[in-house]
Image (cartoon, rainbow, N blue to C red; front, side):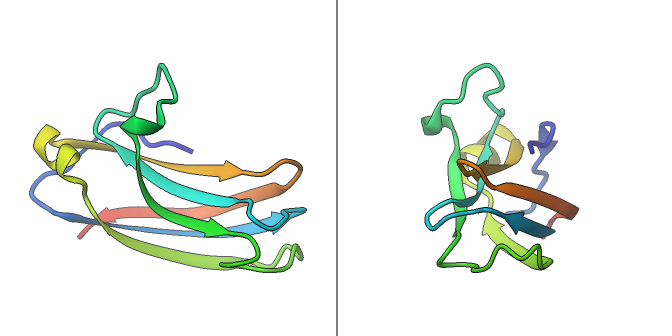
Length: 110
């Protein structure tokens, strides 16, 4: 999941909230929250993305029972996005055979 290019205005932090349900994840697989000033739509260059959170199965949550889990992340907007005046946020999932449903996504500047 990836946003369009957003203006950072004068705020220095963002808040992301979402619910998720998982199934068939194994230890070490997870959900990653990343940002980039422009988004790097043409290529998936890890150097262009800043990692803000890594929620790993077996560490952050256990059980593949489709239980709803609410999440909130408050993070500082990276300097490169503040200088550019824009940010793109993405939620990336790493799993070999798991399934993930993400719902009720809310993003706001703080």
